[in-house]
Image 1 (cartoon, rainbow, N blue to C red):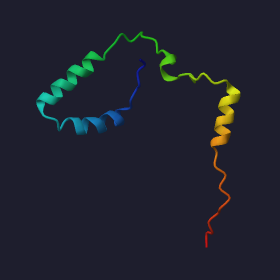
Image 2: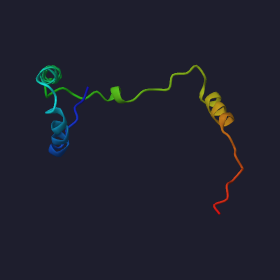
Image 3: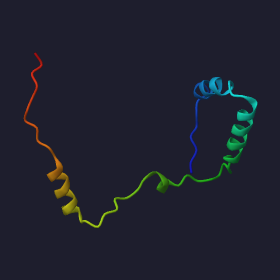
Image 4: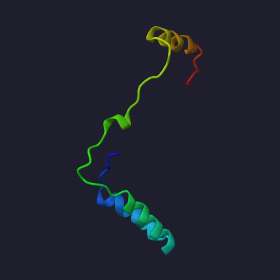
Length: 80
């Protein structure tokens, strides 16, 4: 999994909330965060952020289903 760089302002906003936690919760949070620290040379795998359409229908059938499911509403509301 990749990493997300956050600005200092962003982190400060979270810290203002987190510092209100009791000591036990803070310790558990530190442990969880420490467990997520990985080698900085780790490459981000783009395949984790996209998927593929998985269906037994071919593209023509899928297009047909989409078109048939559309609703054509000719009723318009007056703005006055």
